[in-house]
Image (cartoon, rainbow, N blue to C red; front, side):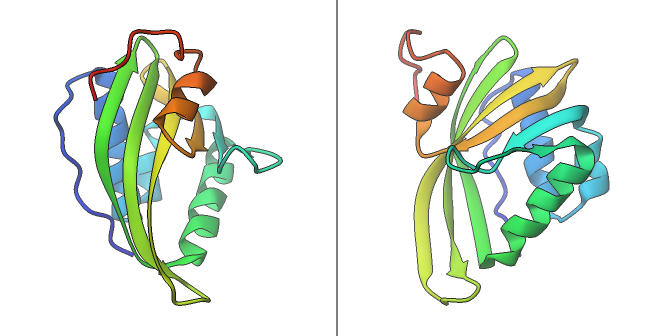
Length: 145
């Protein structure tokens, strides 16, 4: 399942960590990704998933669950907004459903927090507005996306 290369337009440390994580995801290299995740990481698949994936093993399970649903999955990083230990990225995803074979294209966002330079918390969101709200950044000046 290839994932496209990302545009490294931002230079924030947390953004760089995320780009390295996304590259590891693209290569299905969980060993490299693990180095970028806090040992107590909590990853929410979306706002309607009842419980997060916890720890390195949990995120590895998220990868397996995610990949199981897609064929020919490609994700492209479109925008980022970093403030302190918080990062919002918007993504354009496309692929075919594993079971349905339907071609899907969508835009999503990730809300992330970092601890000691590693991804500590993440949630897949419907859009950047939801991601900003989840991180308590909804009242910030509009990001220059």
